Length: 366
Image (cartoon, rainbow, N blue to C red; front, side, top):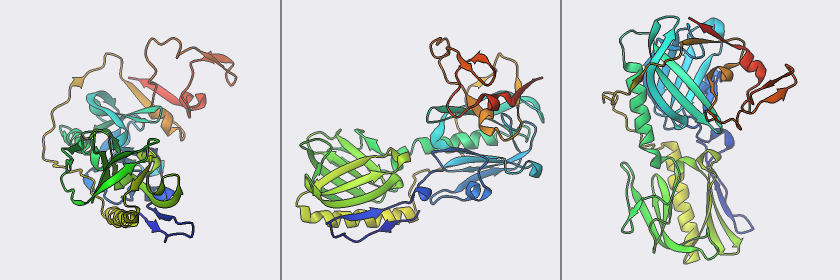
């Protein structure tokens, strides 16, 4: 993570930029297909490898191909071991995963077997991935990913901004493991309303927290993980104010605070700046993983429909994993539209998916 700071400007403003657009945290919040190798294997600060598996099949998009999988604390990486296919790979961030289950699937290499199904959602688009461990009888693929994802999911407070949650009890912060409180600043006004709300700001090595004195549930937690910039300005209608902004993937929050007396504002700005810079050099993500932990076995579902092998031709990778999440039985949502390219009425397609892409996905029944 790169951090850039500027000295107070002539207009009376001090700005601290935490990220450039290309260096904002992305690994856990995106699903990427066939990206350049250098980006695929480059770990962002705080990311570390948990496990690697040498023989895993991407049964949904590359059925019949041997592949390798790397499991980190932020994402699942798969790439084809077939050099002739070139740059065929996947990066699935845990923050996009909405569902995981073990179900039956048909692999060209193993036949009918049990596989790990992962459903991910990015914006309005939903994708399904199916992975099969080609080492017979080994549960390692399923257990490791489920254990790491659970550790990620239960530690979101370290990374995600939170508003109106139970983070304060009797005016004391509910401190997270590995979190250390550095300063508590009283008489801090949250300027989200016309009059503002008076409360206190707590600065830790992980985040900045503000809560209202008269209502502790009126609060906000802003982790440094998604902190984009800090700014002190003197020309707002509230006088000297401190603004904290988060990245687009962090909700794009823009929150303003006034500190009384105002002469303390620059000291608070400098404190947050130093802690943010330290954090970004060595992030505290809170993802403590014990790969020896045995996760609860998920329900095994045997689908009633025939097994289908999906084969992708050309570079239409996204279409192979795309899932239609329209509600079943919703006639209005599925009202056909005229498609000039084929001269027929067809069901509406999701944004970013073309009829040509879907045409190139050939089901082969076994």
